[in-house]
Image (cartoon, rainbow, N blue to C red; front, side, top):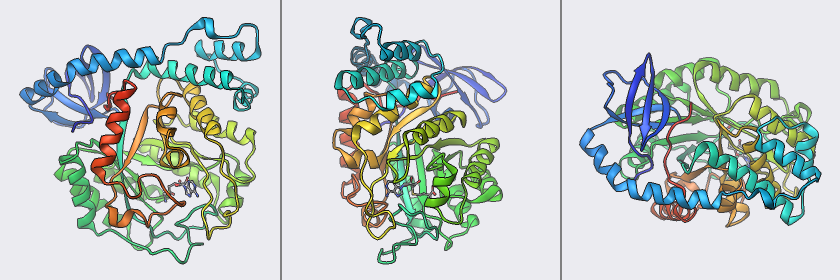
Length: 433
Ligand code: SAH
């Protein structure tokens, strides 16, 4: 099973390498010593993660070549946008034209798109986003694995099923050995090239221990590691970067500071944003975004969320639905619609056609079985696979009935690859920079 294709190094300038994938040129940051033009590499998220033997690379490439071009054909067909389909002289057509010309949309225009409800209008919005996705990202789709290493959390987020509001939940903390084994297996046996390690804000494990885990994984396997342990402060971020982490998944949850304060008593949006900015300054890739459909959230707030994520120039946008979780203060909230979420994904793509990846989140998949496919056809180009050992997965209960909670990893991989192929996507990450 392979989630990335090898690229051939064309040239190297300082720590930036130019890589060719079947003639398509990308750049990637290199931290490996002894890399030369002509070498073959795997890159993830814009980082070179492994140099590979030329013979092995050519074997993989010859297996991929035919498939690569036939998938691309399917993707090009599905993302075709017929200009004649766009209704003329309407407010919608003016905005869509602007989006296609990649001119910045005004907040009112974003609000207008968020309010669309007629089916043909929605279809046009999703197709526009899908067209822009194809234009810049071609048919590549990132498939990241996520390992939920502990569900202990001392924070009081009023929507969250693993927050300190929930006393009845069984709490677990994977041991260092369990985490390393799970990550190594994910890479060696299942072909993952990028993994996210996530937990609640767990006071039972300090940052030095996390650093040791990351170091050990990086010593054992080539992989791009994202951390998602909440706010760990500048020294924590520095330690984990030094240990080998290169990405941070941290949503700002909402861009409205008052709503943020209401949902997270005694915490502030400023602190959350400071953490994101610190991480970025240290060189971390950022995955961020917000919850959509939070009680008290307005359409203007969602526009603000989209703007903030774009302003942070996140490497990946993660917008997911709020799903009410029992035993939390927001247990009686209501679930937003799939369409609402698809609109947000397509707007994220329209606001940043070129750089950021847009992920279909597990929460979105939980809402609707078709969400993954529909999200990928509405501007998204990334999915997550849950790699947490099955015996722990059900206890990472952010909200009830999470998608994939009982699915063996093999099954999830098969389903993912099957879906991606059916819409002409290649489960690869050719790097962004
Ligand atoms: N401690 C880490 C991980 C938190 S859990 C951190 O702070 O980043 C990961 C994400 O789950 C959160 O960022 C939140 O957006 C989402 N989440 C929590 N409760 C949820 C709910 N009820 N519905 C949907 N998403 C939820």
